[in-house]
View 1 (cartoon, one colour):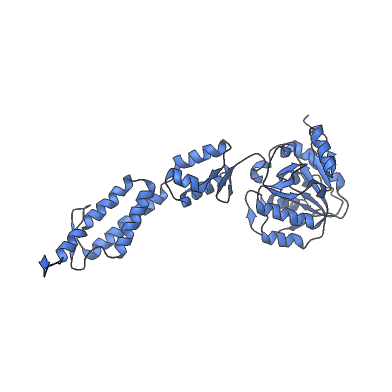
View 2 (cartoon, one colour):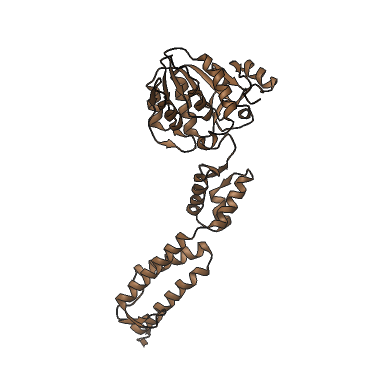
Length: 349
């Protein structure tokens, strides 16, 4: 309608512009849109709903689903309930195909970046992070800032490494126990090789064992001849123990006679390294509180690479290695400034 040269729109015009069945139909069409698009469309509908898309002079409207007339209040309730159900369904829709593709790349040894995957799959970074959390919980990747790294044998969670190469680890433990002295306070860092050490500790040495590992603590607790000190703090799933600030503060209060340090990777040039920053920080605190330090290293640890250096080789008093360590590696370790003790072959050989 035109009044005084100006166009004035009455309530009927406003109603025409804000047809609720069109909004409902748009919501129905969302299911066929790309993932990023449908979330933007739903957000737009929600914002529009908050501004009251239905004019105040419109008493009722048509329900496109049931073909019935609805009052304005019921229509608003219907629209928001409908959108809530749709959002819930979209959030519950597990993106198995996307997750399987990410898992395939990790299995091929390729690191993944959350921002890059979000662009590639046209989803939010939060959706990718949920995928990575699920894969990490299944032990199929290791979460790092901004993405995830593929799992290697050395970086696998401790729970999955306990039953691997048991006899080889026992051989290392039997060689290491010769270094233990009566009455010492030992620290057994979280690691499957150090777990094997618990079974061979002398039962008449009046030893006290401190540890940050859940599995090692449980093993020590089964031996009444050993005293146990457990480091507190939040437990890291991959490490299998506590390595946070609380654990660091706890270990700094100890005067450790001999620590058996876990190693994710070892080399004459790179020293002792760890995969996680918190784990590396904790190991440095253990070293600083220890009078003597020992590392038990399977041969495959010499082929591994980890980003966070814990210590140089010369800062370790003794390295216990397997019987089949190549002669060149053995000589390089000795030259780097540490004592090297070679274990006997496993009983099965």
